[in-house]
Length: 151
Image (cartoon, rainbow, N blue to C red; front, side):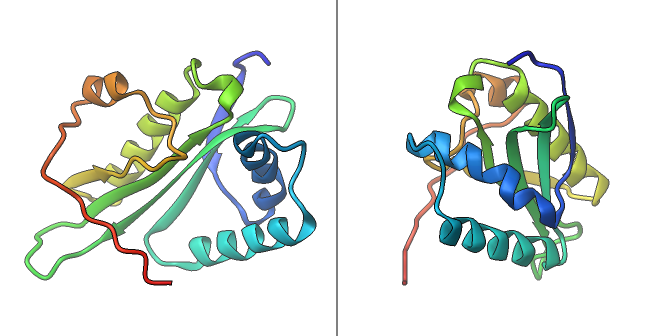
């Protein structure tokens, strides 16, 4: 697949376009309809949450190459909101392409456009951003993060 694509804001109809990316990550030919329905529900929840955004990299042929989700938050002592980029996922077949960096750059721009004074990036097991790219944009590793799954 050539790298002719554009990054745009995600819409509720993107759930079916995101499903093949997740299937590829899981090594499956496709996802079951129930999983796609759950993905659609989660996408609708994300897009209805104030300060949340989904960005997608869409190839000229209409397929999605990757996506990033982000949101902003205000702390009680903050003078400006903070941004959190919580997912940057690119098709495994495109991990050595410019797609992850383009999504990161656009996510940073979206956070800045919403007035964020700082941006945190959470690297999850699904995230496909190169650490060197993060450093190139000026990100620094800070502190420790703890995680607790309650359900």
